[in-house]
Image 1 (cartoon, rainbow, N blue to C red):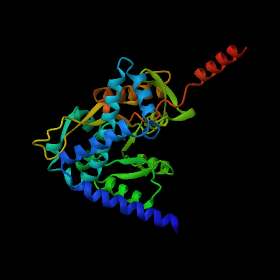
Image 2 (cartoon, rainbow, N blue to C red; image 1 turned 60 degrees about the vertical axis):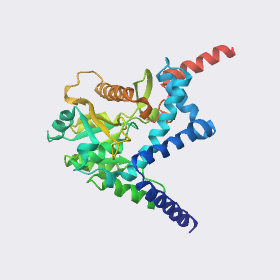
Image 3 (cartoon, one colour; image 1 turned 135 degrees about the horizontal axis):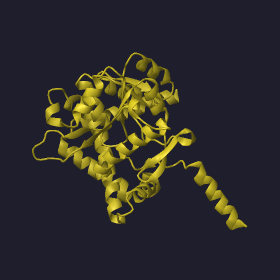
Image 4 (spheres, rainbow, N blue to C red; image 1 turned 120 degrees about the horizontal axis):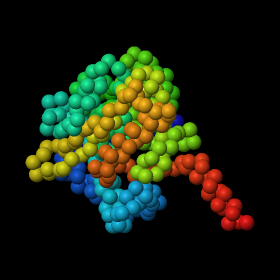
Length: 320
């Protein structure tokens, strides 16, 4: 009973805040996000805001940058993330097929469209970068439906709200836990998948270079693409320059960074080659707008086994 009451209270609080956010103008949304970004980057304890995680990730990825530059990127990152949440709430009334020309500009759109018209399954891969919800919304508006893989929220009422928000343009939500059968069924019927591919994959992942360091990356995406003869589109959706004096809505650039055909891979280890290529493509996209990447994620949490063994050996030598 207490759990149910808490879920309902959280849902009520969220819907109240969401109703207020829906009424905000672009300028008001920017001001709100800027204030919250200042709070997270400059006021809250670093442990609470995971500041040190973001700082370490950025310092290792951009060693040439000063502490001031890294701090500015962290502040802009929080600004972006708060705007992303607000935009997700505002999308249903802001982005329509009719308004898409005002809101969206495309980069190498033909690569994605041609892939989606081949009759082969397509994996659209992205990361926690830019506004990935804007990309999925746009695909749906233009009639390209996907099975979107996401984690189930603990609160069932909030989960239902986010599920409806993602499925309003025709997509099907597939849960990470228990969703494997749904993914297989979708692929067997020639369907397409939309996935975020930049999370740490633990010990079972394949280590590939990402911003100059080995990162454990999910190898099942490459295996599934090979098994189902699927094309891989590495895409992004970044927020572009604001025009707060004239724009009724923010603008995004949705682009295809690379198209990967597993049938054209010539390698003794095609899984690692495919995984490396889509990781490098995602890195190139992130470098265009690094402040729109989720740097507080522990992307490099897992370390290659060889490195761990070497560190233990070095410790043993020092102890001796």
